[in-house]
Length: 302
Ligand SMILES: NC(=O)c1ccc[n+]([C@@H]2O[C@H](COP(=O)([O-])OP(=O)(O)OC[C@H]3O[C@@H](n4cnc5c(N)ncnc54)[C@H](OP(=O)(O)O)[C@@H]3O)[C@@H](O)[C@H]2O)c1
Image (cartoon, rainbow, N blue to C red; front, side):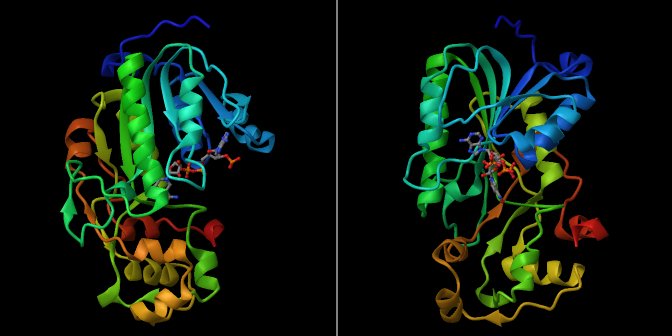
């Protein structure tokens, strides 16, 4: 495949975004594809489940049914969005590393969604992207490994890699309704860690802005800028959906009840500064706090 690589300036984007490949095209991929298609961009999406292809095809995307765990050369692309998560075990993103090793074409620019879990526990402090990476769980170690794999590959290939460090994604279809309906308790406010969130639409917008304006080799925190406690999140979701308020429990009780995966989130507390995304990307969240996100809850979400 021979493609030209137009300059990714704001003016080039105004005419049409460059052709894009979205690898791991799930919820955020679909939202990004819709934004790119709306401004005339050509989008190819990689999914492994043929049933997930139809919504993308209806939106005008080309779809490739591929398993990223059986990697092949994707060819030349001006823009790649890598939204596939790492595998569920181990401390490396072996999926990404194997895929990168199979690439022979020229990929000019990459937007990678990582997680804010790479910072580990920051004892509730406000942190920016210069904070040390201190992953505490294997889940976060795999993300640190993925960021390192992209950096190494960028050096060899000359690609521009931009990383978005993202906390909990919420929005339509992603509310914690099952958890609330099951009556799962929450940590009481005084024990509850700070948690950060981003509405799915705002994340999609940030990904497109990063493709357009992000600086090569930079990481950007992408959150709504208004962290609250986890207790606050579940309590307000319950109220918005007319569900019973979750019981509040202390740390000892929670540690007995929660799965190890759930508990690992309780052991990390941080507040994400998003000034870099605001300044360099021009990112302005449409949902700057949970109240604005919950105001949009519709009957179809229930
Ligand atoms: N959930 C959160 O709060 C959160 C927070 C921070 C970052 N993130 C990360 O943000 C990224 C985008 O999130 P999202 O909500 O769009 O996730 P998503 O809806 O789960 O999309 C990820 C997509 O990757 C696909 N995928 C996984 N393994 C694959 C493989 N071997 N071959 C081909 N496709 C594969 C999945 O396909 P299948 O549907 O077939 O599995 C899915 O469609 C993900 O990496 C996610 O882990 C999530």
